[in-house]
Image (cartoon, rainbow, N blue to C red; front, side, top):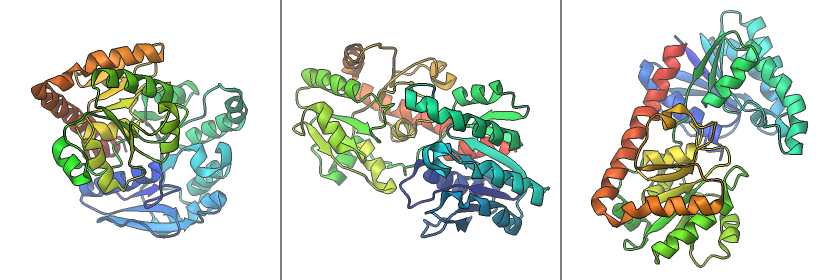
Length: 376
């Protein structure tokens, strides 16, 4: 079986779906014991063994997705695995070129089958600006579903959405993995590498200041933790240090490491005692920032909602706080109560081991690659 992945972005781009494609393509090639190809944009790429990169897309013109069929004709794969997020392929998610390109692939390459990985389907119904974007994203979502021989979804929420529009084919829940390299270091070792103190608690935050990330809840929880652990500092890794400083009321208690390379960001995570990751729609199997913490053995305080996937609901863990809080204050109180484990070194070690084990069983790239291959 010959596989070709397709992504609008690819490392070294600062793009989660591009990173996802890089990691999954490499893991799939290893699992198959044969090379795979990736169709993506022109420019420099991060190489890896077993992966050939084909570059028909112009990164300055998202509508160059129309070149997909020609690239597929050259590669002659059995399957193309298309990475879909409407915002990857068009401004504000307006990407009519995607269904047109997939239609042309089917017309000109009738033996090729198409699998679509839905990283996002459409924006929610609210706020009002989302309602406007849904007017074009919803028909595009339906059109892409109609062209997929297999639909993969990064969360059970998206599985339900695909099924509800009447998709007749196979829908497979395929979690995302961590886009970082595992550090393999203990907390103390990671801090020594980074030149950080080893004798104070570091409360971690990782990722962007996307509106789904509850920054005010993070600030409230950090202040509550600092009242319990007076020397605590907030250790941030990501592109929006100013937004974090704003909600904290300054940089006095903030160590802002900024954007880090994939091979170093894991070390930064390993240096954290716990990660604050409350989301407005709850933890799910598409939250790569939290999954990166799992990978590096960091206990995580997050939120649970009706959209939280069953792998979290059905696997209660001491090292994962699933808060059902309705307010920032409630989340802060629950986090402080849970974080008492930091006082017991043996408990800290067992929590970190538990988290790594959960990651390796559910979110390791080899596990995801096997799930992909088993569904094609």
